[in-house]
Image: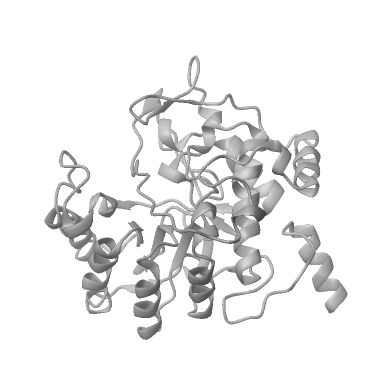
Length: 342
């Protein structure tokens, strides 16, 4: 895995994958959680999350980075002159020292954003039939409505990961806003499956040194980026497009061409392609090209299985292992539970 970041000078950048096309359905569980598709208010945070944040902040582990501001066009900008120490991916394509943003040679990372949705179950069945694990960066607000589908993902050997609670730009949130976005995302996946995720992908890739530190120091969560963009999210019903001016994205052929370019391209480094389980059209694009991967010499893997591999969860090595139960999603509580049970 590539673990070194590089900074280029810039002050702002338009966002990629700027979509909010989520389909809701009614859920009996909604009252247990913060309002959907909104950043959880400070009053909703569990005290142990706030305590863990305060401890990390007091220890100097959370850097002071100014909040960015979201612009009308969906881009976001930092105040004043950009400082490279802020390590913003949106502004400078800066990857943090522990970010996962490139796969090892010959490996093709399979991952999907924006689940669970009405299209997810078909995808999970396809993956299970092919004995293939993938990483699913799930939106907490969507999990509320599709709790059964998240359980299905876990039961079918899929890695569960975070895509925030509300799918909004993390660098525009204050520290406790970030704690709420990640904490409730972790909590609801734990409530549904018993697993505590260790990976997250920020919506639109919007992350900086402050947000990374909160994810790591409070929740033991690592940021996962990508190096290949297909803009499959542009595909709407019947393969019409939500972004006719984008290439890829203007039509189905352009999306498939972007993926095929990576498919037949160099295998050093490997590939982390950005894909979505938003609807049946995006799932179909994946199912169409997946059989070609091994024929092209690729080793398809979930994110946490890249290279020598790493634990999928704080409380289980992978989806085949039963999760350790604990009173809290925080790493310390899990370790205490393991010691107690050991």
